[in-house]
Length: 256
Image (cartoon, rainbow, N blue to C red; front, top):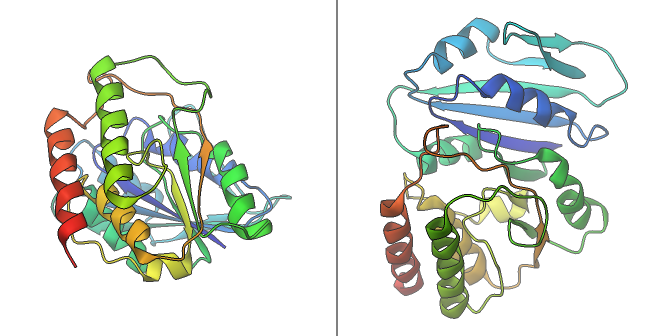
């Protein structure tokens, strides 16, 4: 089973579509989608409680109708998908939501999916193949810098992402091009070796630092598509997160 952790904060406009798209990825693979609502205030929580009144729902196909309602179909050729929401009483940050999701997973392979529409789950095919079918990887990173379709946005974001990845590679002796990428897929054994303490976007750095320092893990990287958002469209990460990332790179390199 593939476990998908979806941290959510104020994504009422996109969450339904994300769940439908995620359910269609890797149709032959059983999936559990763990939605962690991190104290949303825009109606996301109410939407989840309306569509999941009894907790988890499962089906072989998930669609979204014209009213942004989730339609769960109980039969079909695809493997079953289970969706289970978890609620934080207050906003605690992406890292806290990922940590909650980790604790709830039961799959053999885990991946993180943001609740916006910036990433395309069809890119999981190559990632999953390396881990579960070819069995040559323990961890697979997505990279937005391998020539796949991606939206042209902010130059300073591009430079910051490349600089953070370069600094990471220098400190941790790796060759990854996009460590801030949301898409990180890994085995359950790798998840059990991670101890996340960062509540904010620093969880991306902390995960990568622990993976790099674990030793013996087979780390791969594949190109993915990227449909980025502007700040007007809801993008949340800013320059302060970039500065924090550089601090976290050094902090986690020096820590035991």
